[in-house]
Length: 184
Image (cartoon, rainbow, N blue to C red; front, side, top):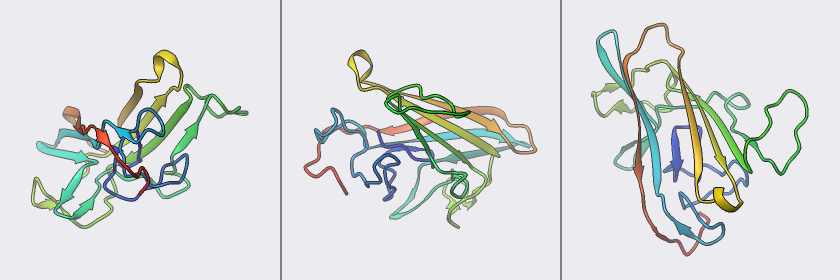
């Protein structure tokens, strides 16, 4: 599954390169590797809550016609760069040890928007909940563990206000098929 540091999985609507290979994929999820068989178009996280009596929502999934923007954004590189690890490689020093054959760690916040598009649900510009997201995905290539990917998401309030009635969800667009050309 393609992962981003914008709160999306699968096809991110954009030409973001894969953090392992640097290639741009038109396929959200391919299994088995190299088969061009896919089972996910894309998915995005949605987080909502109440801040000072106002219901706010931040999402990795915003499309307004052909325009697109994200409400989750990484810090500028090198701070917001995705981290990749693998059990196939050796690690030294204080860095966390890998958990799987393909670990992908991304961090991002909802405090900086990439565009000036208004929030389509409110008709105003996006108002941040003040969230910092740490997203870790783990994939294995052997036997019993090759058919799934674990995704761990930690949400932290970095704002100066309390958030009540917090809700977390993932909107997924599954799609099953065969893509003749796997690269974009």
